[in-house]
Length: 66
Image 1 (cartoon, helix red, strand yellow):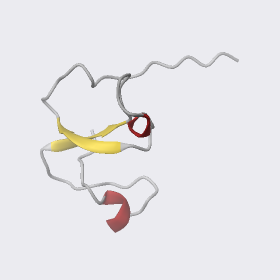
Image 2: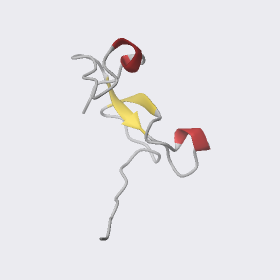
Image 3: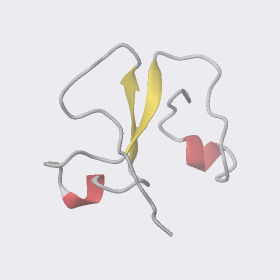
């Protein structure tokens, strides 16, 4: 739900930055199964319009057993 700003971590707090209050794009993190390795990290971020869909964007399910 966070709006995307290319330089959010250089102009704002690096801990839980709030980002811009307006804008078309939302933050998208990580990569997809066929992306280059450097994109497949939670630290990789870019923006995408909220109403755009494609085969590369989704969510990951994680199960931690104790």
